[in-house]
Image 1 (cartoon, rainbow, N blue to C red):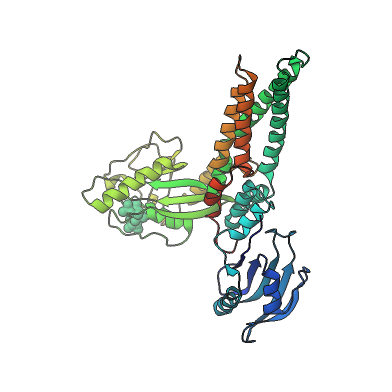
Image 2: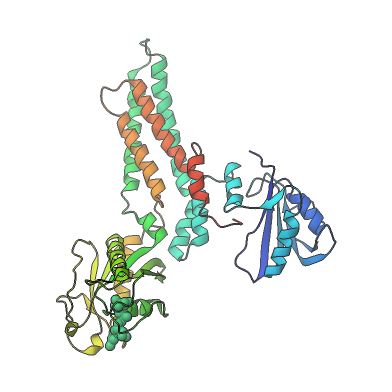
Amino acid sequence: MSETETIVALSSGALPAGIAVVRASGPAALDLAKKVAGVASGDRRARLRIFRDPDTGEEIDRGILLSFSGPDTVTGEDLAEFHCHGGPAVVKALLRILVARPGVRLAEAGEFTRRGFLNGKLDLAAVEGLGDLIVAETESQRRQAVRQAGGFLSGRVDAWRARLVAALAAIESGLDFADEDDVPDDVETGALADIGALADEIGMELVDGERGERLRTGLEVAIVGPPNAGKSSLLNALARREVAIVTPIAGTTRDVLEVDLDLNGYPVRLLDTAGLRDSDDVVEIEGIRRARQRASGADVVLALYPPSEAGVSHETFSGHDCVLKVGTKSDLGSGSSADGVDLRISVVTSHGLDDLFARLGRIAEDRLSGGEQALVTRERHRHALMEAERELWATLAEELPSEARAEHLRRAAFAFGRLTGRIDAEEVLGAVFSSFCIGK
Ligand SMILES: Nc1nc2c(ncn2[C@@H]2O[C@H](COP(=O)(O)OP(=O)(O)OP(=O)(O)O)[C@@H](O)[C@H]2O)c(=O)[nH]1
Ligand SMILES: [Mg+2]
């Protein structure tokens, strides 16, 4: 697939910065390099050049130009990189003169990578890995993303698909010779045995505690409890900054506040929520609804119990499988309002905070470790593999005509294809690429 339009965008981060990289990809990329920087070779050498407006000759900046001839590039097209100074006005001027050339326009979100995908430079699971790598915030997430971007999942799926195609060929050869006696039954029997082994293998990968997905998104920890329990104070203490408003007024927090933490290399997302109580205030009622909703979906509930004199009723979240009961304000001396709290803390004296951190760290380790090696990192992968597994088992049903077996295998192959994007790609493309930033 060859594009007629050349796309340009700022591919480096937020401005101002020391250096900014503006990329151009497409048939006019080398011409842009020639017109603006006086280099058109595509020779992959770094060259220090003056970047000029080709219409007026005005100097825009001095910088490094790199040019690459396709198809051996990340996009599969001719590519030019203008490394300029990272001032907002410099980048703006450079982009302005580039898009002024015929056939050149600003890139859409993810369009460079999309072109790479369409030109067969990387498959869909690798594209997703690349997207994860760009947003990875912790070491474990980076390790997971770099594996996916390197084609970890795609490699496994390709191998599975090859076995499936071999089995399909065996079954179809049986179909072609159905009227003749000389095709041995054991060709099909052998093929079906391998399908069973394949289905088993996929099934084993799916029993992974969803570690891959969890590691990608982070362990969600919801802080809940009655008003004034000290939820926002705890969030601020764990985040080590004043994220949430803290006041002695019950019902201070209404919206759910989120803070991402790096806990021993594992990503944790803390949620501060509205205090739970009966209320007539519509805003507070909505806040409490959201608090309950987020708590029920969270991986861990930190249920906070203030000292007894507060005289509050409290919920136990007994339906949730991971609840840590935390008694707050231990500096006030009196006992906690709940029996059997797991630990007591004070954000005033910092008592118990290290213990709480350590416990959260152990939970994160328990739930997320191994996520780097997990094959499945997205629900999309899980769905496709589950479908493939289902179709593979369906192939093995007894008394099934060979035509029907072949059809189930084709459907399984289709599910694999959806994963890597080698077939039926268009419908999933939009969803994948829309999450990319411009210039990627
Ligand atoms: N002595 C003492 N006071 C605390 C402690 N933690 C919080 N407080 C105080 O308790 C009051 C309520 O704290 P918040 O953190 O706003 O409580 P909250 O649970 O977020 O309350 P809502 O947002 O209203 O639900 C504030 O005046 C805090 O200063 C603590 O460990 N010790
Ligand atoms: Mg609060």
